[in-house]
Length: 433
Image (cartoon, rainbow, N blue to C red; front, top):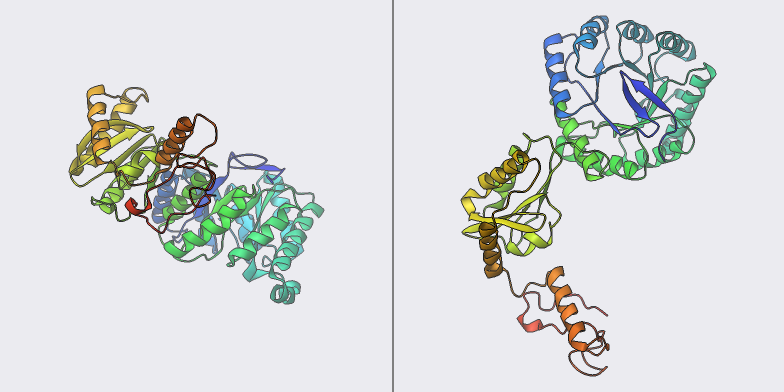
């Protein structure tokens, strides 16, 4: 369920049906203007819509004035414990200020921040973390952490409403993926305000990316969440942005840059696919358009499994094929697959997003495909052709090609009989009734 309310952070709409917003947080000391601005520029180039900076000291609040002025994307000030820094961040021009009412000093301090934010027209982010819940919810946190998180969030929302302030979003994070999912699902039914999602302290680039994909992906697939941040233990904030975009792209929520499809490899593999995939992934970073590129390791899957891809390659020991939308373009030597793939992609853009296909080259590729296709592999396409041929041979009367109703070991009459002895998957094929 999408949030009903919408706010704007530096002109970026959040909630109310707007696209899911990607944000990250700088890893630098905020007062180090050179390092901070360099990182902000990198995350902006990686696709961040918003960036958050920590403001734990007066010198950081002072630096915020320059950061807000020079940043290519809106800046959020992250405040804990000291409400006077929140006031200074607002005066510095921060496009949004993140506060946790549970540790900012009590309702009266919150009221001062809200009053100044209301005066300036600046939105706030109300943050609830499992590690910093109000004291009166500590016992509940042990017995029912989900209820404790949601109770804290609802209490903070009610405090904002009592102050007649509705220009805010809510974040509710936990280190636990199940608790984050359950609490945000519950909160989404209780409040209309935009929700910021994240798995707090998720871990390394490897484990943290997986935990974030599971937790945030589950909520986003449910339609819950208006802005996301991936929290990884890395000094390279742009890596968080890349992971966020991969999650959004996988769910078809937003598009940015190419989508790479690559098979997991198997015993049919006949070329150095791992280095080929790595090189293609790296070279695709130069393209902004959301085209799909497929890299599959055998001629069987090359067409059948990625027929929808804008461009794809499939290879064998000495040669491979480049194709588009399931149709061959040309056969090339295996060592030239990557270079020739990008040559065809560049031709496509030069021709105004039209595939350039020479029919002689395409015919050669089709002939190569036919010669290299595994005649024993039961691809979905081949099974469909066999069944269609059997149905045509039967004249539509429902009789099997093997004779009467008792033949075929109890299988349906319309299914073709397959030669199990000649199959590479003898004894492992599923039985269709």
